[in-house]
Length: 256
Image (cartoon, rainbow, N blue to C red; front, side):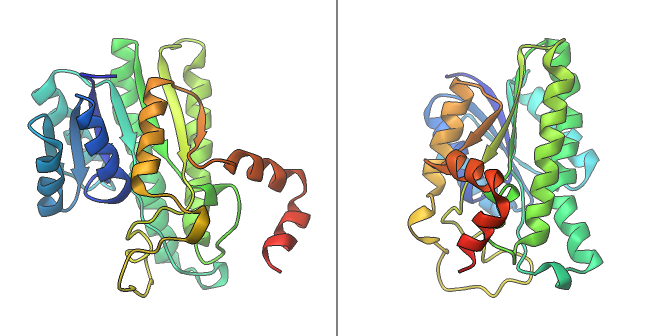
């Protein structure tokens, strides 16, 4: 997989930045989207001459559309679009405010919806393409109840992704729609979560966590071998299956 034009939102840090650098190392053209210009330029410099930083607020539809047009103006086409932008929250269900919930939906769901509605019509015209939505294992299993609104938003993203895939499956077999669900990833995501108290260093999450590079490597493999859903950590799929086989028993086992 070389020479592709790949758009990545949330590319100024964490999974997005690691994925961008890895894809650039494989000889691809990467378009980096995020709100922070300084950080974007730094990642673009690390990616090399075939990286284009585009300051983008993905919660605004017109800016997502401008991202597509800037990409086409520079590279002429788009092969892959990765909706990776997101933000967490540190708040239990009964404490979630209207503003909290709206922000979680805007950043984690509506931004991806704008991405889908912006790029899929283009993919239809060229009859191929690959859309990747980055979700979370928390969308399937309530390992962290203080991430409630974030987990709910990612569950909504899962559903939108699956339904889009079904909408396109028969008529557009060469447009791939993929959902990626990482576990806890050792980035500053937790520090930057809404209502979070920052800690001196990134939260590593223990033995079940992943590095951004491990998640990025799984995404690169997904591009080479498209499939509907990808759990990026070994054993995740089996854990989710065990959860849904007996929800009550599983939840009791993780709250002891």
